[in-house]
Length: 136
Length: 136
Length: 136
Length: 136
Image (cartoon, helix red, strand yellow):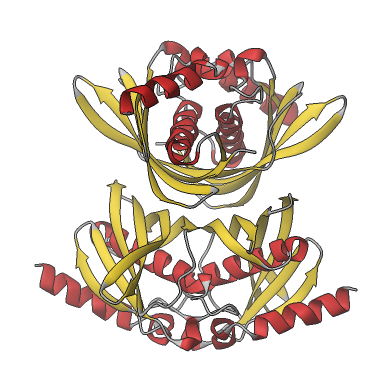
């Protein structure tokens, strides 16, 4: 039931006040993967006019956790690392695509690619990898 | 001139719209170290009432970059990793303390501890490590 | 000239005394990717009979560097992270497959999957991601 | 009983064939910390005459696990990241000093500094951070 699963995921996202500030949207949610995006607004930039790294790391953190949660249920981020490949500038939207690389009963290792969306094209701007742990 | 350096760092922070949303404050800034804090507000939480991981990763990203920038000048975050140790709950403020572990002409490796501040006590809730690169 | 490139890569590997101890073999080397493998021998184990994590981290470090070096030329590892997914046991050989995720003039971000090879099958046992920097 | 604990740790290390190849030595082992060192020999180098990154990552992996194990008991490495600060050259010995940053019932987050020892002086050459998980 991918449609129901997406609706359920979007409900969880709507309960995160911090995600609401960023106008984050869950675009896809299926067993083993999640896509999360944020529209770029002036409030999300840093002093050079690029999207702040903290927005990218938010996307990585949350997309990784949704991907892990898609196979583990209610989950928390245990740890992750992120590499910034290029400044996120002139972006209309940032899209994080996360997938489960491997999982057991209590943990999942996931990867995430973050893209700049601009004029119908996507450019990779960051890559992340981390561990998601079943809550409780 | 630590006082001037702190003022200069606070000016840079004030030019980051995303940091303004979070009401981030640069508490200390000296060669090789930086302290950055955020007051905890309902808007920064996730669905379980804890501070969202994205806020912690923002603090890590930005405190690491200020620490690296304190020895390199204008800088960008190249990469970092963060381990979440415990949920940040009932916090009044989150404080990130970052220090340079080693640096060359173009890069600095930095570490960051993130604390929950509550009733005059600080509790470690996340630990980060990353690479800061001189801009340009 | 993939064949020549592979031969050149194998020559570099042969000049690494530590790789000789591990009987490491460069199985593939092309622009943007590298495959490195090690035959599992009793000397590579830890106290529970699994391949020592240090062997897996060696494979990640070196495969990432070959992948980055395939686009940058002579290179060094700047940093990497590795997630261990399952114990590497009953393995005949360990295979690390590394690819470039993104690169500029002086740096490349690469990922690496490490597989246990056993009876013609491959099972993912570790996943890594890191930064490779042009030497000099 | 720090002395007994060190003896016990050294016994575990002696059961790791891969650590025997590297002539690794557990120099200190107490609740929350571990020190592990390796004498530099020609067999541990790479093609430029520096100690191979895989030796440093072995030290990080194993020292982090001993540190975590000092509070958790029998443990495995879940994940770690390592930043290389400078080439390990002209070293007599490499020393990894690992400490527990935070721990719960099943996991510990640890950090590790790796030093080049030369003529009685120590120089930091790598920094690591990772998660250790109780085995079983």
